[in-house]
Image (tube, rainbow, N blue to C red):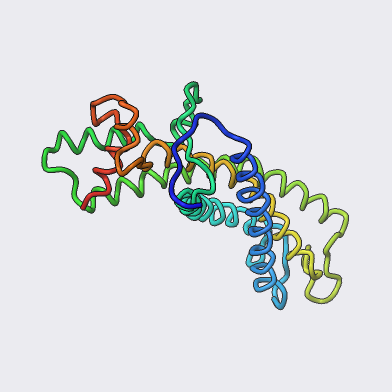
Amino acid sequence: MSGVKDPVDGLTSRHVLYLVFMHMIGAMCLDGGINFGLATAMYKNTKDPISLWPLPNTLAGDAAVTIIIQITLTWILDRLAVGGDLKKGLVSPLRMPQHAKPWLRWFVGLDDLRGYQSQKTAALGGHSRKEAALFWIGFHGKRIAVMILATFVVFWPITIGILSGLRTQGVGKDNSDLGGDFNVWPFPEIFKGVYGFALGATTPFVSYVALIYQGETKVKIDNRDYSQVHNDDDDDLNNPAVVMEDLQQP
């Protein structure tokens, strides 16, 4: 089974299984394993105390930086993974829900694409490669930033609260000359692994956004634009597939 399928309205049982098992459970296990390995490299043989706040080995800072890096990579790599899965025909891309919330429409970004196309049309000569690159950096950058902020607000305070409670109880404390709040192996590794595992729960949302984005912008049916097959608005500015085709041109 291969080839991109026709877009569908709404999540099917296949979509649910795909999102839950491949892009949630699978992603959480992968993220947890990677973070455990990173923590082992960072903390296993360190000669500096591992503390909640003080540098150089601060778990509070580690938690914040992990959010930034993991969410950024999730947004980029998971969207690529979804595109590859669609080409293999694992699932169908999705159409934008008819009554989608404004925040979901913003994350998918069709309005931004149309606005870019409008500017390109007004400029007559079109946009340069540099302008196109800046557009895509801004397009993805602001969405990554919002996801990082939302994830930080949810995960970081809870994490600091848990670590503060564990520190108060002396869990992970090193009573040797090295000291530190959490130097006892493998507490830092377990912490970072569990933390990365939990952050992996954000992946299905990125996957869902990508499925809609692909369904609205890149799907071709019989080598024709999906919107043309379904007789959508003839105005190219309202046709995301045409917008995407124009953006991808040299």
